[in-house]
Image 1 (cartoon, rainbow, N blue to C red):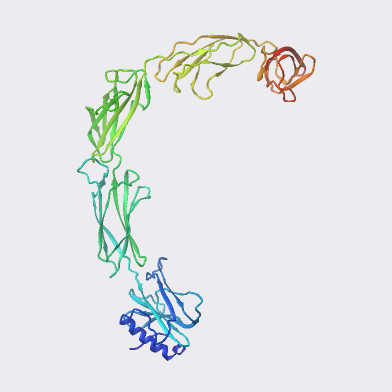
Image 2 (cartoon, rainbow, N blue to C red):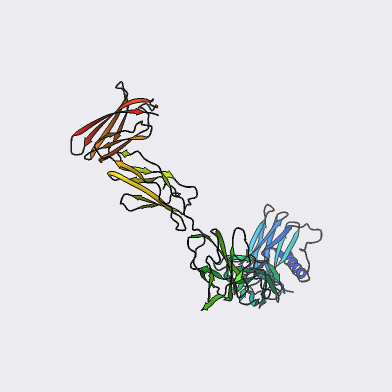
Length: 551
């Protein structure tokens, strides 16, 4: 038998290595499981690893090469060959008589090409490592597989084929989805890994099935119960096969998964409605992309009777693919002023139901009116805070209508944040104010009490008696000011505090917190306020008033 190792200098390893190589190759062909070692010689090669054992040198960046790794027990001259399986022909020499030390693991890669640069045929090859020391000779070998054939997969059957309704109570509908697929044209003696994925409409994975290894002519049926589908709609079944060398292909199948049942809506009543007058009928529609049955059911529940049976709605008609309906809804059905829950139920042609619940409250009772707080009969600032008592039964959806002289009414939500008490701007002279409540159903309370307050706009410095911390000094003027300085003195003429205001206005309000210049609380007693006003057009004016301070 001739050994063709394709080396430029065969004398490097010497005649002994050539003879040993022939012996090794003969041993490989005969199925020798271990490297060949001369009688009485030590093992020089501790191990040989091949990763990956199956590879596809096709340039797809997946398993394009194989790495051979080995370690030495002592210093030796090492050669690494790739040998054809059915002959003693050396396909490629990877290492040719290189001295190496036993200090590390050595690795060498093969790109699947022969010594001439041509891609090796798809087949099984042998990697042979030889090591020669001054006293010993050793070899180690292993199989490596070149595989560039892509396995093909075909989905042969999906049942049910078009629409899958895993949660349908209809016993005629399959509760599981069967997916049958098979491999075509795989390489001989190959096996593949199969991953089956179901994707939702957005492309996200819904379920990954376990990996499977199949023989070359294998096929498989998977069963899926649909429990993990994330939404109703069109999905995609994806079967991907990948062989041991990393070659991969996929097959796809669209499937419509029905999980939700029909859409149903009411057109003349909102959920949570509170009504003074109920409509005679409830109008609505139901639709599904797979069609709906010609029936809709309704029930009327109360806090006492919470789950009455559904009754079929008799007034229905189809328009195109949509079923329209109307159901009685009036005092002949709802007889008390309480909250009712109207339940509707519909079903698609695959047996999936959908229900809709609407809460509706019948309310014909008028709310109680507010009680407004009486203000002082005369005030000197147009800024007025309307306050009063609101009955606890008033809800967040109820409104208050405030009437003030002949002005357009103000409308507020008295239970809304920051809306009550309510700020008003008074008219000069007499102001008459009253209010009423309108509840969510439209029932109106009686009028509140009417309060009267007179706005005095005459010039002067006006001070509440007694004056308390965070009250305001009111200064009314005939023309706008540049600045107002307000000094507060005790009865001995000592300065207690000095306040400033630079608003250009004829109505000035200056708030005082009751603290002196040293940030100390002022004691109870009479004080003197002196306001020094500077006008925009020139000139100034001084007001003085004595007031009782009561912290």
